Length: 74
Image 1 (cartoon, helix red, strand yellow):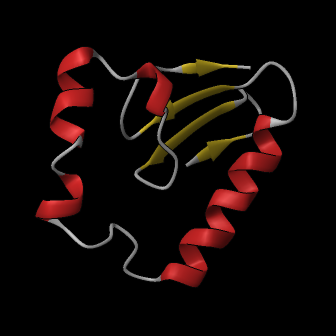
Image 2 (image 1 turned 90 degrees about the vertical axis):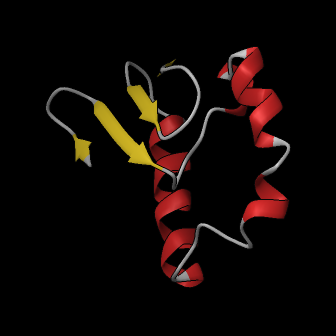
């Protein structure tokens, strides 16, 4: 969900903040390749959505609440 008026993004698993993981999240995340093959059920659509969020992330004054990790303030 992207709120352009308030400059908020709630990205779910499309965009994650790997650098904002708690130590416990980082430890658990090492099992992801074993537990699942991919979170993208539609890879072309997921790629398009990620590219859109990367474009937003190049602007200023946004807050991104990702599916994993801490909030990102740009």
